[in-house]
Length: 175
Image 1 (cartoon, one colour):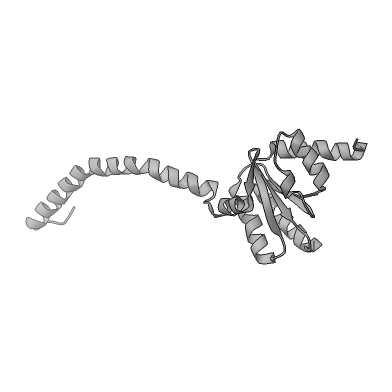
Image 2 (cartoon, helix red, strand yellow; image 1 turned 135 degrees about the horizontal axis):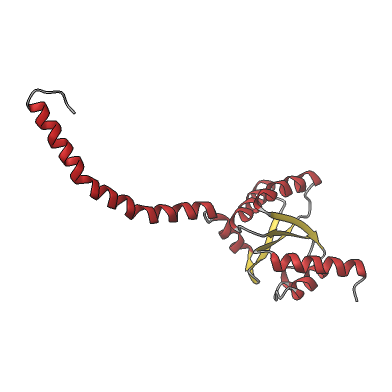
């Protein structure tokens, strides 16, 4: 039976895990306090947070949140990256930090209550961001309209060119 303090932590973790779109499990062993503060600062603009948690409490909270199969990743020091909105930007931030620090390691993650591997987290980091995907979609949707306007405008442009050529032929100034 957990103590009252641990029960509060379990409830808080369960709420965060159920609310997060992505939870990345990391081994932070060896990182300095300054490095952890820099990592937290890099995650904050993406509505993500870095939280250190005990393995037992995380296991209980995950079960409470309806996440099964997390136990194999719960060994050694554990920190969670909880992403509440976009899942790509925090994945990129963690992958970049792991690559530059060479200390932080990604163990795996939870994407919409499904367990994913460390390789899958890295694959998420290589995806285009939500903004990039939306701009590409907007470009694709806008392209037919632009072509339509161009086709409609062609006869008018041809007529203006004919008038301009006729004016030049008569020796007048070009319109």
